[in-house]
Length: 193
Length: 115
Image 1: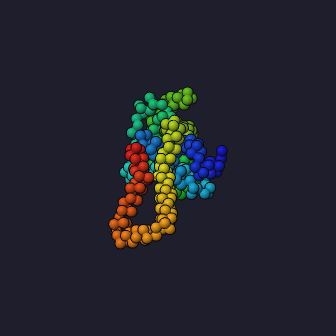
Image 2: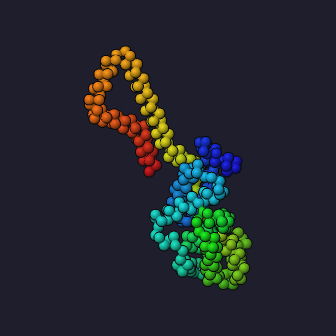
Image 3: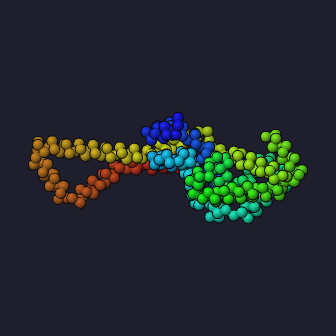
């Protein structure tokens, strides 16, 4: 069933079609919401709120963008509103120096023991919220720059800049903790995966 | 560590699923929440239909009775118009009880059961 058929079924009151839509897009929503709000105990409620908004506004969807882009926009806005409501304002503003400070709190000793992928995943979670957002949308969900612009309202240049700076921050951290010996260990772990 | 190797490792980590989990029955829960949230609209529609039907029936009975006992109907109308304020208050009270029973209490119970 394609998206437009699915939408018309839902608008005709078919709840099974809506359940199908939730199943299809829940991964997208949980990735965006999870990366932004970073609270596992609240994640389900926020995701539910996103899909309730999707249901209530589905009649206004006009095929001007892909359904996934439209749903991602709702997920992004809902998560940002959640952050504004429950967290301090500085969460929403990127600050590279604070992020780098957070990142470098990890010591080399920890790194040698840690699983590489989990380690990097943890580091991504420490990045400023905008960086996490564009990283998730671009790399994980494979949205284009134009689509990310539609979802977040950020200009294309800013998106590219955030992607670049996020990568640079993580690289800086890796350079800080990884020496030649660690690299061998990293490669071994990476190949085992 | 070489720059390209670092890039590769980082790029790979960007594409790694973050591991956020939703319960297996999440979609069913959302559908249930939607039905519950939309229920008050159905209740309101039902209330308006029923009120319309009751008023129509009342009008039909009065019209019929007008032909049977015209004087009684005119007397009743005169009585009502002489006591217009108490009549309006009673009508509003009855309407509120009727509205609370059909819409308001159901909505409140639904909200309470959510919390």
